[in-house]
Length: 428
Image (cartoon, rainbow, N blue to C red):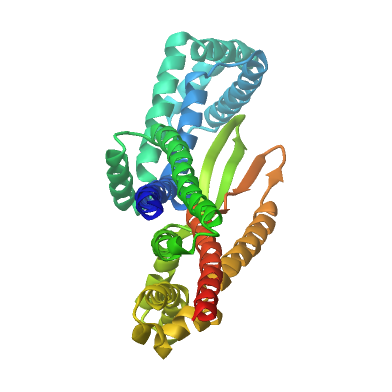
């Protein structure tokens, strides 16, 4: 009676745990893809280091200054003074040339006529009024509009001559990503990605905790069945199944993310702000299997060897340990007493690096987090002309939590197997 009810209950728990594990893996992969796309669009090479970005922002600032162009009273006085100086200089040069001794009769007649009809002193005295008329003409709305058009056309000409040599590649990448998210510009993309990531993160952790909750229920059933040895084999078999789910999700799901950003970088230019928000300096997200794949893909002997060691001691040994534990407990005496089975069931714990990986990832997280925090802190600047704020978004991901759950649950199953084996020996 107990066995049938327990089998049904454990089957439901295993199905539920498998569903939660599948959701954790799937949602984590979606989240990683979105973050990769975000890091591409907001990469520093497309922002702070992009000629086009600088050009567009500076062009917008100068264009706004052109459109709001108007002479202040002080500027009018200064302009009038400059025009007066130029006109006085022109008059002086003209008089100097006229006063030169002419070589022809006609030239002598013209010089005599000029001296007779033109008062040079009065000519100099009229310069201020001419200068004022020029200033008034320049300050007319129609004249200002013509000046704006000339300046704007020259600005556009210079803008067309300034471009990033990698423009086509950048446009291809950004257009491809924008098309995937049904947006046409960066602000809309960033807003949509932020909402998606918030929802996905909540969902991922919900299913991760749901998976761990099924393990806690199984542990509770072990406590309940403490004095029911007839249920041990069935319960152990289902527990191994749950452990496989934890291991599979743990090694294939992202465990750690390294994310270093310039949160804001602002420059003051002719009274306006040139801004570069959310500039991604570095982004990487890795699971155990992805690390193994990267090491193997290098093709270097030392890297391949390290990859094989991680694959062997962090994945193969735990899998072999779980399988051999089931064989030892449920198989025939011949299989249960096999040396290889006994080795993996009882003695492979010290060879398995699953628990070491947990500590190594935690230490790597602490170390990298500290290094990034220290380096980014030196980039924080606050002055009248520039403001720079950096952020370190390095985090441990749900894959790490699930893998920790597998290690702890595996230790529990090892202890259970020893006690069950000892009990059988005592009975025998």
